[in-house]
Length: 115
Length: 112
Image 1: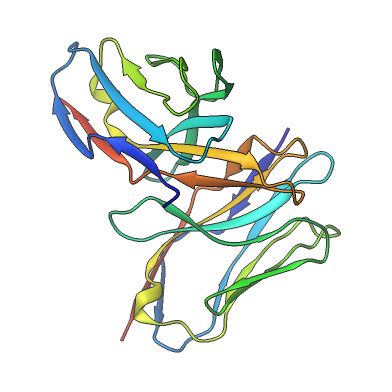
Image 2 (image 1 turned 180 degrees about the vertical axis):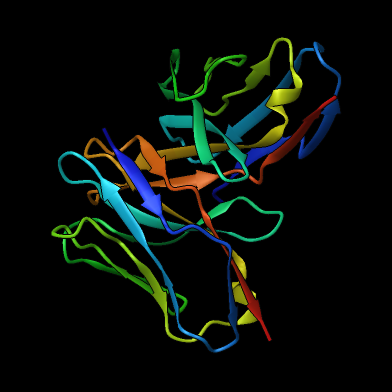
């Protein structure tokens, strides 16, 4: 089954304690990205990756890091989390279907609370 | 640049009512347009898509037509059900096909 898997689904942590949210896809997609979802702001892109070892900033990259060492994995790293990073996070992967469009697949989401 | 503007919510409807959620976009070139749905506690799922002007996307009774002249992609359903309660996101992917741009989402609640 084609899927994007994020872990953990829920996480409560304290300010300043480094954490990693993992994301893995089994569709051999080149493109992966991270979004955060906040009330009234919709989905905002944090970082994206066009392929292995190629990453770039999205709209709200401050306070986050990513890496793309393998095609299937795209972890999101918060080196020193702060309360304003409390949010719902989604990983997505996509690839051109060869029929003139790209379809994005999303993980189930990670609800992060930083206290 | 590229952007998507969609109708503010929340929207509350009675079962079997007609639904319209407005979406307009700004884009260079020829984007593809999408509606995604997010059910409570879940990730986003593709609801329907349209890849060129005048295309109509449809799925589960929902429809949207890609109108280049009005840069719109409004979502409609003739008779909503309680199970349609969710958040709906309008989105576009740029001409190159990899960057997605999402609207802010519209929360729909359908009451029996």
